[in-house]
Amino acid sequence: MRILIVSNSPWRSDNSFGNSFSNIFEGIDNIEIANICCKYGAPQNNVASKYFRITEKSLINNLLKGKPSGEEVFAEKTDSVSDMSGEATFNKVKKYKSIPMYWARALIWKIGRWKSGELIRFLDDFKPEILFIPVYYSHYIHDINKFIIDRYNIPCVGYVSDDVYTLRQFSLSPFYWIDRLILRPKMKKVFSWCKTVYVISETQRREYAEIFGDKFKILTKCADFSDENKPAFKAPSETLKLVYAGNVSRGRYKILARLCSSIKELNSDGKKFFLDIYTSTPLSDRQRSALNIDGSSQLHPPVSYNEILMIQKQADILVHAEAFDLREKLVTHQSFSTKIVDYLASGRCILAIGDSFCASVQYFIDNDCGAVAQTPDEIEQRLRELYDNKDLLSGYADKAWESGRRNHQRSVMQKELYAELEKALEK
Image 1 (spheres, helix red, strand yellow):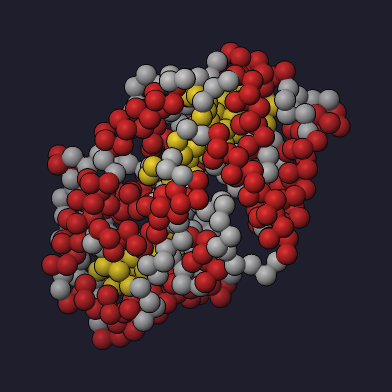
Image 2: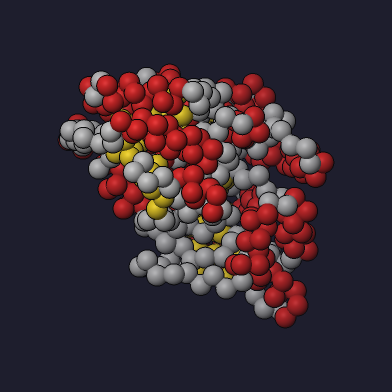
């Protein structure tokens, strides 16, 4: 089965897209995957076999200098740094998140000659049988998807992990709402192309099914939750070690700052807790100061994915945080963090902080697989409970593992995914 995937980011194990899609597809027999990416960077993974790259820079150079608008690229075999020439200019769009700048980027794709001979030769050589569509909130990626569907008359299956359609959002910017209203019809069309659309959470499945019909199934990261793979429970440290690894955007900084201050308060009569935070999110001096509290918390630069997995297994408590601000709650309402499955597989107690309106937090409540603080005021209470009754640590660790076994077992999820792809191929 030859599967084609068009992505925004290059398929690398060190970015969110690459980490998730490698996890989902790695180990499935009888498939071959090709990837077209629309952003700078070299691929680096053990799953896909062929790669083609188109970027804004290559489109502009094609228009101005007649250079190819896209090219076949090859995966890196080591952790060497990718050629990121020109990345800084277009990363300003991401940094400032200006809607007009996104429109400028979309305009480049609109006038750019991405339907090149190089792209068509790449596609003809691969001969895709099915298109697996990451449903991005994008002006241009789905133009590429539609071109491929029409040219090769192939079926497609979608995968959406964010709310790309509903108006349950909050923004005072008229540009935001203009953009949302422009893109909604395109998102609706993408869903109509797909025989099946995978979603990231039960909340998203239920809400999208009410709008678009019963074509939605849940697909998350997965892991081997067999008995022989279960980590041994680590006896609690005298000072309970908490770990948070991930971005601290979308209001998570405020939650982590509150957690740090709660730990400082609880440590006033003895060192009970210590929090280590690993993040690549740029922070101001004031923010860094709030997350770096002597004797209570420490901020670290990001480390590799494999290192994070090892760090998590040395922790007593893993922290999951979602913002309490209305704007951010609406953004994350349907989302399910990609690191939750890693947490479940670590065999450690999980502390989830956030409103149950967020699907990730509701997951911990529904499966009773973590200590949950649903308000900022409950953070200190949950910490006290875990310290005073350390049997809760092993209890929640066991419940987390069992939730992973029920909901994210690799062998089960990959078997169901392959069957769904085969079904889509039946014309």
